[in-house]
Length: 123
Image 1 (spheres, rainbow, N blue to C red):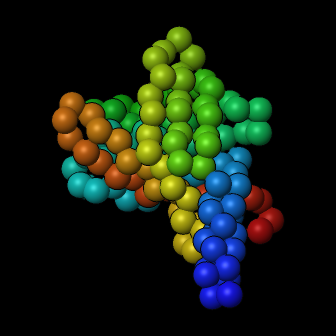
Image 2: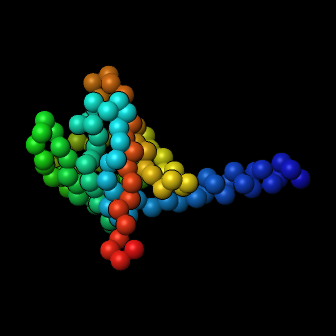
Image 3: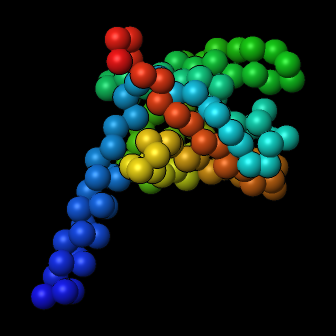
């Protein structure tokens, strides 16, 4: 009986995590290590429910924008900028904090970015 309850609890949490939607606007609030903030995928990004994104990023002190397509399976985020190459990030949605955590390796350096959802107007 206890095993059944545990299994149901694990399946419920897994369902909540994999069912989390990225739709909306997110801000990067932290990276580890902090000096790799410029390798964070976005400063701010908006994902829509048609699989498209638009983002702003900062590289070498310059702000730029990007648009393209994305896929999210609950554990991996794939970003394909318009006219660019696909990049993949290991991801997880923390259902307790509401944060999206993305992990990436760039030129042998590993980084983690924490993004928080921007509340919609009126909330």
